[in-house]
Image 1: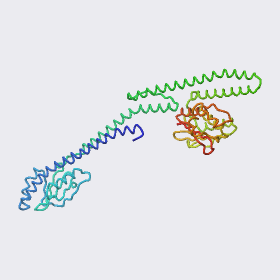
Image 2: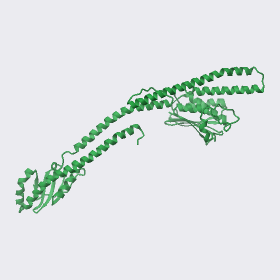
Image 3: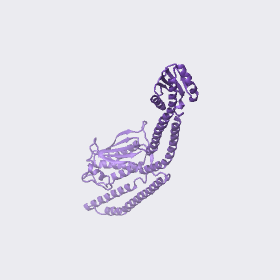
Image 4: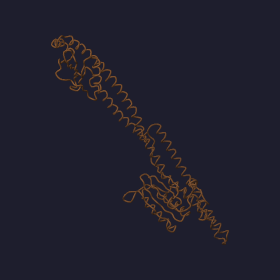
Length: 436
């Protein structure tokens, strides 16, 4: 089956038409080309039998010629006795009725030597053996087969082609609303909201209205999540500020240091909540070069991590060295910074690679850390998931939102986040795949 809806609809349209064409053509050829031709040839065969009987009854050739002369004009026949030249057995390959004419004449009349249907396309030449020598009988072709029998087939084919074109245009108009709905759904999957108005058949309108309702609910849920997390995170800063101020006024002691570490941990949690809540809300799609974005992220990471981040490779893209892709630059930077931060938290160095293809853009972050076991990778992508102590015990605990934020950003670009093993560095390999 064709993969596209156009192809399947065209197949549904063409199969009945072709089937009807074949059935009608076969029936038409059998009934007209065979049965009708055989009946018309049998009528001429009766005349030829009577003509041959008169020739055979005459005592000599002159008497035979005089006996059949009065019959030729009424029967619309021409007779050459004896035949002036040999009559070859000939028939055009596409002359379907000619096959029936030849077989019927030979079966119904003894002495038929050959039948020529090619010498003169409007006449039939029959060579018959008689007691007075070979006799050539000539009569019009229309007496044994229908004239212009191909007209019905030509008319049928022409009408079918015309109706197929009309049906295709109608079908295209009916499929256009479905394509618009698919385009709007695909754009929303990439985080884009395009204008869409339901149109087309009743079922398509119902599907379009359901899509608009679903899109509105999802947008409200995203907005409510952002407002709730932002509000909670903002409200928590006030008591934290009071706690930090109170702790700064106390004397230095082990208990004070532990409390300060707890406050710093809570501040990291709040920052993580805010990053997760913001998502793509503060960012709009714009065309930019992903390679330039990756270079900027690597430069910023090296300033903060002492040069342990490298841009390993860049593959694909335009031949002039710049490929513009619609991205949310702030969100992509945040996702890459989170991935690089995780890589340096659990390893000593990180490398970033960029692969630009026709339909996707892939950022790959690899590290030399302990990696993540295959059974734990799905759990690691969930918000607030922490894999300590298996992943790390001494380098500080994260919030558990780094991979979740990156996965959420990938989904808003119509892509995905995949975890694997780095064969080159031996640690974790994270592929941030974005749809173009």
